[in-house]
Every structure is written in C-alpha cells, then in structure tokens.
Length: 207
Image (cartoon, rainbow, N blue to C red; front, side):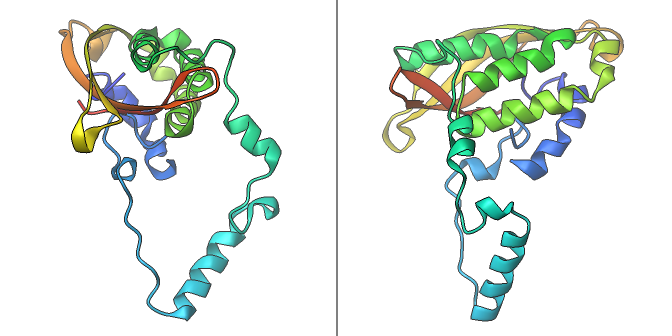
C-alpha cells in the first residue's frame, strides 16, 4: 500500500492519521520522520501556558513526560518470531505483508504489521487498521493489492541506517480500480536491533 491509485480510497480513509502520528499518512512522507527542529518559547509566560495546556490533555499518569511501565511494555511487545536475523530479511518479510492484501483482510493485515514492528511503523499500522475498519467502500469495491519487492539497498554516508526499497504492485477491484496497471513504488525504512533480532521501526512510502 503506497501512494498510487489505491490512494483514491486509502488517502481518504487514512486522512485522520495525518493529525495523529501510523501514523501519519503512510502514503506520503511526513516531515516528522526527519529530524524535527524545535525552538524554545520566547517568554516564560508562553512556555508555562504551552506546558499547562499539553499536560491537561494527557492522562494523569503520563503528565510530565512519563508513561506507566505497563503502557511502555505494551508498546514494545512483539509477537513470537517477529524479528529477523538480518535487516534485509526483516524488510523483505515486512514488505511482503505490506503489499499483499485484500479489503476483507486489510484490518487484520495492518494489525499483523503492527505486531511485527515498533515505533512509528507500529503506530502507522494501528491507525491504518482503525481507519480501514471504518471504510466499507474498500470491501464494497473488492479492492486488493498484490506486489513484490524487486530491489532493496542500504543507505550510505549521511543516509546510513536508512534503507530504500522498490516494489512492483498492482491494485485491482471494481469501478475506479478495474484495469489499473502495475506500477513501481519507493519506500524508505529504518530498523532497530532487539534482543531477538531486527525489527522495522519506520516505514515511509514515497510514491
């Protein structure tokens, strides 16, 4: 799933993600995926006001920048076998799940991706699952996506730690989705190494 004809439906169903964070919309490149630059408030008054407003919107147990141990554990829990021995193997597995789906199993597929990822990638998948569950048009149009990973390379220099993947995908279905040609798509990804192996933490489709 990336920014392609499927975006006709998915951009709409995932629009709510932009304001959240799984996920910013996975079909466009969120600026927050790059190094964010923050500036301090110009006065102590504005700083106090901003801090108070932010704290007021958080649960009491999370105010002041803290997260309960139970919540932290849940955010970092992975299903058995989620990690891979090498970064390339982790990306290949994730890409296969990501590009092959049909409307009837899209919610389950996104939850599967969430259980096999961490960080922003997990947040994106969870929000995509929630949004897909509220969009009956996907099932009505019998939308499906099939694809394969055709190239993968690791960045070097300033791009070290970032991977670039190229997939060839085709979206099918009824109405606007009928007869769409296969096309190439680019994805930027990052991983982290856990005690059990490599896991995807960022998954940013570009086209």
